[in-house]
Length: 553
Picture 1: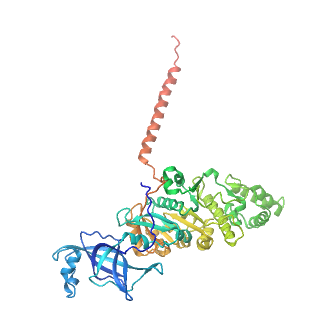
Picture 2: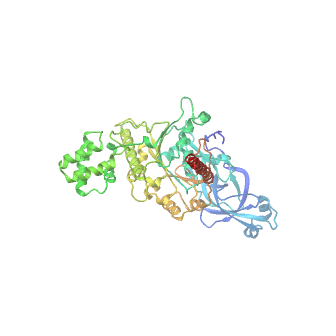
Picture 3: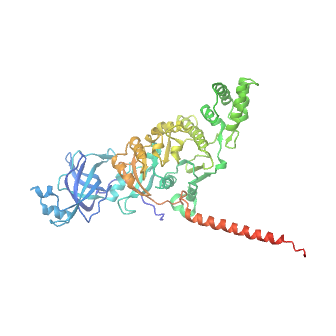
């Protein structure tokens, strides 16, 4: 792996067409925005490749970008060309670089994306197809780097280098993501197990922590996969992550250091923690809880029990029934009595905090996420209103196994995630959801993720969930998903001007989610177990010899 860093474009002035001619336009396609062109067999034009043709729109010359959607092999020049007296077949053959005789060619279908409108900052459909006989060029690498991302190259906003165009040689065409776009309109990384979603998420985090962005980031890590992000601070990576006095802070919070402040819970959280409370219990609990919260930010399980007795009488059966439920739920190391007042130990500019949740139950993980995200969201609301300046900077949180925190069902963390995803943009609170089961995600949560990085997905239910919830996931995107291999992705949505097939770049830090080398571990374990067994057998014989009765007969 090289630490050579690509330089983002400064503008979109690069010419659209490269010098490489890949074919000649033959005829319209099946839909209004498709056309077909003929390419010689020795030119490799793959599905997803970007091509350019020139046309005239309202009297002005425009270079129009299109994407290859299908390629079929044929023999001989197309009949339509040969039958059209207005088209010189020799000229067609010359343009294709093939003889006029019996020869293998490719009929390629392409879908029009449009010409880039600088004023609008995106592509505009020319509303017309290219003329038959027009030459088709490969799109220029530098042009693609400039127009594919929805980025303002004239600003100093940070961009994430996530990889390279899949259909071009590695490192030929860089793919950049504007961080402002996906950090404010939310991000989804969706992939089957083993396709590289955690690796890709780490690439995104590395880019967000570089000097050009210095993000304030909180990561919910259910499997303990992301502690290797601490490698960003190693001297060997200083050219990537350090600048002047800046080197990113990496705060890895171990499972035994994680706690939930009881005062940060709400009444709904308490009900979810308790075991089947009756209506009377709920009434007493609600009165006790509201009064305690009005009085103090320091609440223990014992305090809550005592207040329940005060509300319903010292000999109350209801308070007694609540007592064992409250003690069972809250009298654990996970829960602490003092409210969390200083949030900057969790989130601060230039710092990524990873909460290792691998020793917590799923319910406790959801409760922690609910309490923390609610606390952070309320702090950002106050900061934006000018009521509190302790969190006067934007936040971004990533949730690995996102379907665990925002399931298609119920979870304590689901409500606050829906709120942040629908309203967080105006408060500077972005969310990234990582999941291998899009069909298990809450549909509202998935639909609010404006940028998507979608990797190999073969399950039809997951593909259907993406199609229904992700606005930018057209049939072209869905058709690509089963054929992707690990490390390949379709990137689409708010951060891109059009979906892009991408080869994800290599990490600068070590990957922490590698699958175990099962056969090697089996062999090692067998050797150890076998050695212990042999040792115990030898010791048994030694003991027998020591116990022999040597008395003379």
